[in-house]
Length: 161
Image (tube, rainbow, N blue to C red; front, side, top):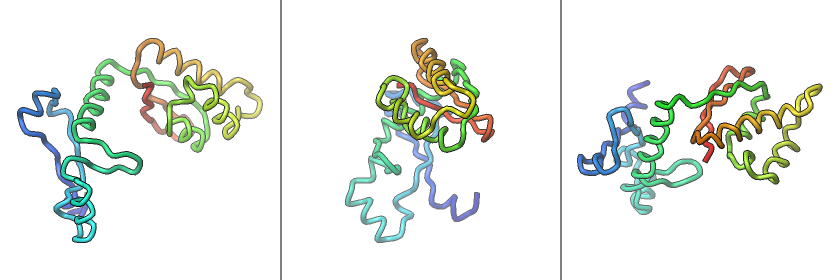
């Protein structure tokens, strides 16, 4: 990482009482942009929006407590060895599956996914077999599953909740 990139990141470590309350260990670390190191105009926007207790991602605003809770849940899931499902789908199909997990249990979302990303030629039912495998893992109580894309040689975490 360059010196410029390092200077705009800050490690968020809650005070000891907060860490004890939410069970944070040294294995869980959040690196968030430091609002103090923003250019003045952008910094003022964050100050106006109360950035001190929130961070902004592309599609949602989470409190630091929520972020720590989610990272702790992911860490705990990895300690339980989450299942891995190796699949052979195009990159766009994989990204659509990862964008939301509603396709797992919602029929309308499932149909929409299949319209935009149909079964590979010569393999009818392949998409449904993926869905069944993910549903099985969800019914077994796993909160997450790792999807390994054989084509992309890429592993992605899919929340089953």
